[in-house]
Length: 422
Ligand code: UD1
Image (cartoon, rainbow, N blue to C red; front, side, top):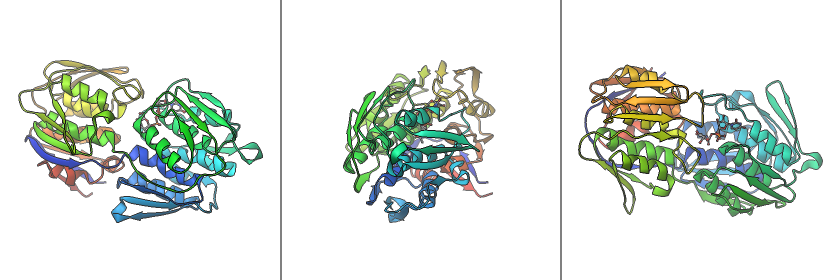
C-alpha cells in the first residue's frame, strides 16, 4: 500500500485547477442507464471511484469509453443485458446503490447488492428503498441483495417525503422518477449542488423536472429519455480542501474554477477565522498573510450548511488556531477518526459523542499517521504541510478515491510531497 511523505513548514503560493465533482459524476454516470442514446460527460474527475462506477455500468451491459485522458466519459446503454449489480463491485463504494433507481425505471426489474463505502457510520439505504416503494416498487431483501420489481414493468409517480435529508436517496428517487408514469413530488429533498447538476443533465436528456436546489422537487415522468452532453459541476469538496492550504500554511492560492456559491457556509467560517477569500475572474483566491487563524465553531449540516465532507480538513486548520473551537458532526455518527491521528502530530482534541473540542497549538509536529477514510486522509496531509518536520500518511488508497493527481497539484503550489510506493 502506498504512503505519502510530506515535509511541512513553508507557505504555499500559486494556482490549483479544481476538477469536476466526484459525487456529481457518480450520480450522473448511472443516468446513462435511463436512455438508449449516448450520454457524454465532460470535466469528469480522474479518480478510482469513477473507474469503479465504469466497471459497474459495464457489468450491466453499458458501454463506457474514457476519452481525453479520462476528462470525457462517453457512455451508451442501448442494450442492457444484465440487471444484477454484483457484490464484488458494489462493496467498493456506496454510490453503487444509485444504479437501482435507473435500472428499475427503465426495465422494471433489478437486483443490487447492498453497498459498502467509507467506514464513517452505519449508512443504511432505507430511505432509497422507501422512496422506490412509494413509487410502486416491490422489494425483497435476500442474501445481501435488494431484489426489485416494478409491477407492470413501470414505476408510478408518487409523493415522497423524506424524514430527513439524504443526498443519495434524493438522487435515486430523482433518477427513477424521470421515467415513472405520472408526477412525483420529492419533499424534504437534498439541495446539494450535485443534485442541481443531476437535474440539469436529466433535463438535457428530456426529463421534466422543477424545483432542484429547493427542498421540493417535482418530476413529471416521460416515456423515454434521449442523449445529452453535460459538463460535471466543479468539486466543492476538492475546492474547499485546497482553499485550506494557504489558511493552514500561509501564502496565497487561487483555485481555478472555484465559485463562492458552492462553498458559502465554509467560506464564512474561513472569513471568521481571519482568512481572506476573494472572487477572481478564474475562480477564488485565498490568502492568510498575518499571524495564526482564530478559533471558530463549526456544525455540519446538509447544503447550504457546512459540509460534513470538509469537517476533517477544517479540524486540521483549527488544530493550529488561536483559541478553542468546537466542531459538531450532525450527519455521520463516526466521523472523528482523524482526531487521534491528528493528536499524534501534537493536536489537542477532545472527542465527546458528536462533538470535538480542539484547543489550538502553535505548531504541529510531523509523525507517522494512518488514513482512515477519504476526507480524513487529506486532513492529515494538510496537517503535515503545516507541521514541523516529516509526516508519513499510510493507507492513502482512500485518497485516490477522491483527489486526482494530488501530489502534482500540491507540488504546483510549492508543497514538498511525494508518494512512496509500497
Ligand atoms: C453523500 C456523499 C458523501 C457526503 C454525504 C453527506 C456521494 C457519493 N456521497 O453520501 O460524500 O458525505 O452525501 O453530504 O454523493 N441515511 C439513512 N438512510 C438512507 C440514506 C442515508 O439513514 O437511506 C443517513 C446516513 O447514514 C447519514 C445521513 O442519512 O447519516 C446522510 O446521508 P446521505 O445524505 O444519504 O449521504 P450519501 O448520499 O451516502
